Image (cartoon, rainbow, N blue to C red; front, top):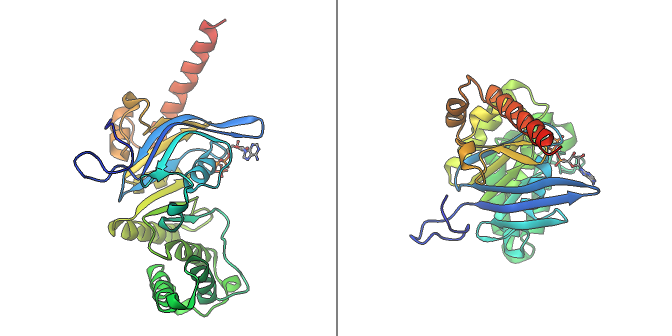
Length: 276
Ligand SMILES: Nc1ncnc2c1ncn2[C@@H]1O[C@H](COP(=O)(O)OP(=O)(O)OP(=O)(O)O)[C@@H](O)[C@H]1O
């Protein structure tokens, strides 16, 4: 592992987009994230995968700075997570579409663009950002449609367009394809690849393991811990889908994940027995 933070490396190359060391989060009575170590490289799509309740949303909220009771070190784009300069550099799409159903697509984007860049002096820039974001998500023909009349997939794309306003360096997408049909899922993933192709870093969560194959890098989670792709256990190895499959000697990432779960369960059982 390289030994620098997410600021520039000694050779001038940018460090990782996200770097976590001993990252922990307590929610209510539970420790939801248990001392995670990982890095997210810039300009790639990193998939955060794991079953429902394993802590994916909590991790994403920590990255965007909306999660309370975070301990450890978490650097995002070279700054401490949650710091003010990061606000305009990160786009975040939550699980529930965060758009106003009684506004049109364009009115929604105009509204969020005004929050991002208030003032008459920015009117032209806002106009450009809104036009480009609508084009990015391929909703030009629906720009005057009420959000409430859109399909689920179109609504997801409006949320994504809001996150794309201002051309963020990091996009954090919490289960953006949940509930979508296979064609829409494929189209959205194509869009993520187009966006990453322009240099944007994407951290995207899913509990659907076949989506892992569409990511450049993987962080596999279970019960608040990272099973693969983290930096604390380099022997846990390959964080590309291919390397993970090869290391676990499985056909699919899903089978690799299940094997890792079995190994972790066996390890926990033997630790408990030896401590008795
Ligand atoms: N306010 C809270 N108090 C206590 N526990 C909480 C609270 N909010 C969430 N949790 C617990 O934290 C754990 C992680 O939740 P989180 O939403 O991060 O999981 P997730 O992997 O994103 O799940 P999903 O895929 O279903 O969205 C869950 O077990 C959840 O029950």
